[in-house]
Image 1 (cartoon, rainbow, N blue to C red):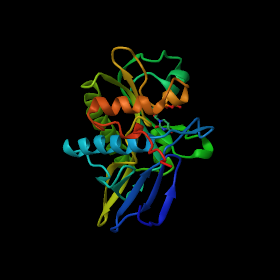
Image 2: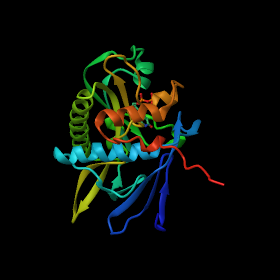
Image 3: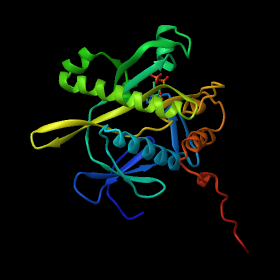
Amino acid sequence: MARRKKIYEGKAKIMYEGPEPGTLVQYFKDDATAFNAEKRATIEGKGVLNNRLSEYFMTGLTQVGIPNHFIKRINMREQLIRSVEIIPLEVIVRNFAAGSLSTRLGMAEGTPLPRPIVEFCYKDDALGDPLVSEEHVIAFGWASQQDLDDMIALALRVNDFLSGVMMAVGIKLVDFKIEIGRVWENDYHRLIVADEISPDSCRLWDMQTGQKLDKDVFRRDLGNLADAYTEVARRLGVLPTNVTHAPKPTLIN
Ligand code: UDP
């Protein structure tokens, strides 16, 4: 990798300055964290898989006209993206009850929801990304009412697209999280999907068996995370050859 200025290092990715103004290079690490980084591990191949899967989903969004930050993949671990002003909210869409919604409302995991539910969490690691209401979002100025309406519309479009793509390969999209950013054009801004879309930020269940193919495999110690992500990639036709599990070169004396 060429020497680049590091802008920010997060739990699963590093951002570097991009080659042109308004661009960034997003590097996918193998690190996995859960429960607000209380649980950590390095999972060989995860970064490569998420780079490819996020490329696949973002390219698909572009093809159906949903604006997002993806420009092009650079190599196995890096992609070129548009730099955005991230709105400090995690936008969660749920189709079936799971995770924190199940805990909060005492609803069995897998219960179908009467309609897709959009939730917002305030991005603050120290506070554990608390769930917030639309009132909080407006009152504290994290986004305007117009932004909020646009974010909900964007998130629901992503949900329709992703649900269809996953259903076609026998996977149920239970829920997912996206992040949204502003891009400025003169005095106006518009909102685009940013960050990543990968099994790190979605709940994906096999339609037939209910097997989990997402980060819950790591959160709940259900097996090998890279194998689960490889299965998602294989079904989608991403990664026709199993590059992440390629044997290491042997040293010849
Ligand atoms: N999610 C995420 N990052 C977070 C919190 C949640 O990507 O910091 C995703 C998570 O993978 C799931 C969805 O958002 O697909 C809903 O997560 P939930 O609120 O149920 O939280 P969890 O059970 O993971 O604490």
